[in-house]
Length: 136
Image (cartoon, rainbow, N blue to C red; front, side, top):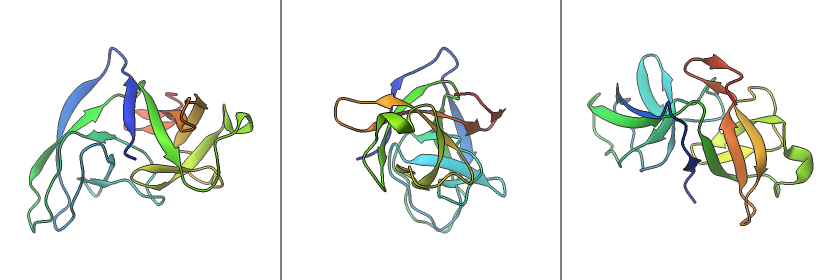
């Protein structure tokens, strides 16, 4: 299931980026920026920029894309390694990929777990984003 913004902040906005060439993306993928280009976030990225607003195709160009950026928004994200427990709340974790948080990894601490949704997904904020650390 794709991540989703469940509680936007007043700072939510749309920003344009050039996408990485030869990479595809799907609406609501978590997006990061590396070497000046947007791409799906992975466990190796240092921060999350936001959510992709529409699918993009795998073409050889650095075409413009739109990203919903909200450093202070609250997101609902799947966990990849274990069920979200009360002991995870308040702690920061790494991403597994562009749509899941890894509750067993804490080297980058990009996503902070703020709670548990009724469906068992992690309620999260961005701990590291484009404007710095500790926004969540």
